[in-house]
Amino acid sequence: MTASIRVLVVDDQRLMRDGLRTLLELEDDLVVVGEASSGEAAVSAFAELQPDVVLMDVRMPGVDGVEATRRIRTNWPDARIIILTTFDDDEYVFEGLRAGAQGYLLKAIAGAELARAIRTVMAGGALIDPAVTRKVVAEFARLAPPARAPDAGLAEPLAEREIDILRLVAQGLSNREIAQRLFLAEGTVKNYVTAILQKIGVRDRTQAALRGRELGLL
Image (cartoon, rainbow, N blue to C red):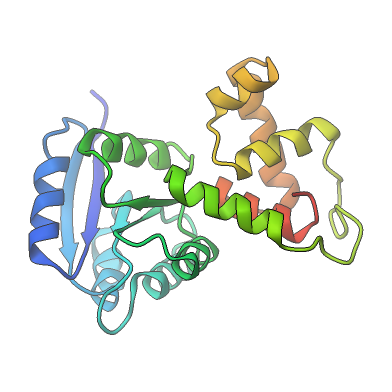
């Protein structure tokens, strides 16, 4: 039997925490192991409970969700965090991703989709709401390329195919979608993504998109 995914729910509204707990515990493989009503409490709860995945609200009094994400990822680099919010403000989107969140979803998401997102992040993937993905891609397109050659600073440059895949990762495509787009096997894409993460020195797909932008690859 597959072990349950242990989830920490962070939101300053009790009704939202209760609702998320009810939704998640309808799934056989998900269990809510704790709740927190502030960013500061989230950091303490993570230290105590060591959950597999954190659902993190953004706008909370005191320490907000972005800062809590940053603190958790600083102390526990392998932490998996999904920002779940009613807001798709540009500021929160980019700060949340820079802080190390592997997912950024809007609270309008259906319960089944949220469950799939948790499983995706648990498996090492990343998931960004399509509306948010469009903002990220638009921001990449708006910014001028860095004033240096692509790949500068990398010990081993990315191959042309790896750059193609990195650009699709930055658009929020899954391995399966990338495989279909490039006519490759899904396992081959997974191997490419692993190699890309290693070459550019990041842990997950969202950080890969940000790092790719910094390197002038996007």
